[in-house]
Image (cartoon, rainbow, N blue to C red; front, side, top):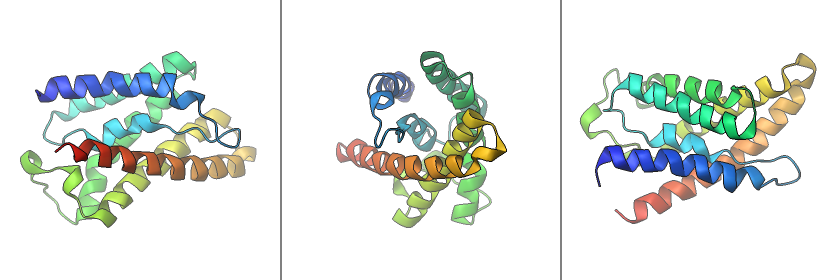
Length: 167
């Protein structure tokens, strides 16, 4: 399948899955998985970075539109999309990554988990910090960030395994 069509379908499938399924899941009353960040994790590095940042912003804005959250998902997703490449360079200890052949699924398991965890915790911290937006709620923000991130990381790993099973 053409890469453009594949990521176009993924883009809309993640919005639909988040809105219809994952926003209606609340474990213990407040743990809500945010699987749509999978787009930032698996989008290829070889593509134009400006288009990637725009698509990430639009994905977050699409989520914000349906859940009426005022742009916090767009801001958080755009931020992790922006730091993705420097984070990969730091994790792999390389200044230059071979863009045409790089695949996030071929990372060593520990580096893949680290990459996913850092992006997920960063995203969730920004979302919950902007949602509460007061210093007095820092413990609530950290608590929700930690619990929701753990659940989201597990879902992302299972999603990556399912996506790679067909290859």
